[in-house]
Every structure is written in structure tokens, then in C-alpha cells.
Amino acid sequence: MIDWFRRRYLDLLGSIYIYNEHRGYTSIDRVLEAVKARAPDDHALIAAIEKHRADERKHYVMFKRWFELRGEMPLQVDRTCGHIDRFVEIMFRRTIDELDTKRIIAEDDQFEKLCRVISLTEQRGHKQVEILLRHPLVTGDKVLMKIFRIIEKDEPSHWAPYEGWLKANGKRESRWWERGIDTFIHSELLFLKLPVLFLNFRVKRRTEWQDAREPAEAKASPVPALS
Image (cartoon, rainbow, N blue to C red):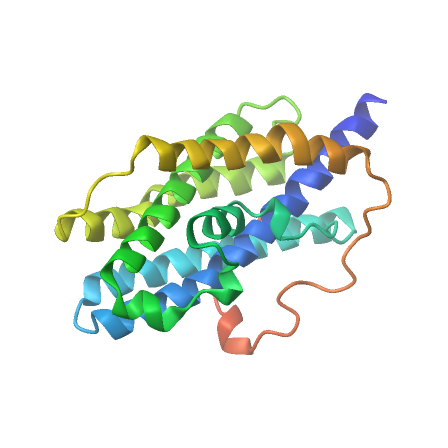
């Protein structure tokens, strides 16, 4: 029973993470488009965001490898389990795919809002990884522990470029209600959606990887050996 519980928990955890990592690097492509249009000469900012994108892709591939080692596909979780998805929907009143990139490029307040959403999301991710590295259901999986240690090391550089832009341009720090939204989204996933998914045995597995239809250049990224 304990082994089944642990396997089910890790199955859901991995499925949620691989969804979010894929959503992360594909969403950053939109951010890069905006930054390159707004500040084409800010090579440091562009390079930092490109590194963020590469890391998210790397993390996705590591979780993909973890599932391959388990001999199964991830469960079909959707944007309701995506932290950045929910944050964008609440702050912009539209999904990530519906974001108006041209407006984000043209309007400072829209780009500022997006930077703050990404920064808070990445900081939340770092806190969660620190918790998972001590979680008794996770510590027994050596491959998963290696993945989370790599993510823990990578994460601080992910919110840095967005926080840097906000400070360099004299923008305010996150307010209590924005941090409250971040906490609400995390709590909603942890205490509502995860338990519901855990008990929903009708959730099917994916039949293909999320990056199956992406061009080869979008997939290029170095990945550490996991086994």
C-alpha cells in the first residue's frame, strides 16, 4: 500500500512538473520575442532570458527521461495545473496563448506585469523544490533527487533578469496582493487539485510527448546524464 501510494504521488508530481517545464520554455519564447523587439541592444538581458529558456527545456528533458526510465508516459494534466498559466490568466484575464505580444512590446506596464509574474513564479518554484528535496516520498528516488538538485541550482538565475529589469527601470516591487495570488495558486494546486487528481483514476496517460511536434532547433539543449 505504501509503495503504491508513493508511486502514485511521484507519478502525479512528475506529470505536473513536466507539464510546467514544457509550458515554461515555450512561454519564454513569447517573452524573448517581446524583449528583442523592445530592447534589441540589451544583449545581457536577452542572453539571461535565453539561458532561462534553455534551462526550462533541459528540465523538461530530464523529467522526460525519468518517465522513460519508469517505462511509462506522464498523466494528461493540463493548464489547470500550470502555475504560470493560472497566474497569467488571473493577471491578464486571458490564457498564455492568447497574450497580445504586440501590446506587451508596446506598453511598459504590460511588460512590467509580465516580468513580475515570471519572477514570482520562479521564486515559488525554487521554494517548492527546497521542500521536495526533503520530502520523504521523494528522497528515495535517486534520479528524481538529482533532477531537483539541478533545478534548485538553476532557479535563482531564472528570476534574476526580470527582477533586474524591474529595478533598472525604476519599477516597484511586488505588492502583497500579487504575492497573495501566487500563494493562492500554489495552495489551490497543493490542497485541491493534487488530491483530486490523486483519486481520479480515469486520468489517462499521454500518448505522445509534449515536444513531439516541435522543430528540431527548439529541442536543442544539453542534458545531464541521469542514469
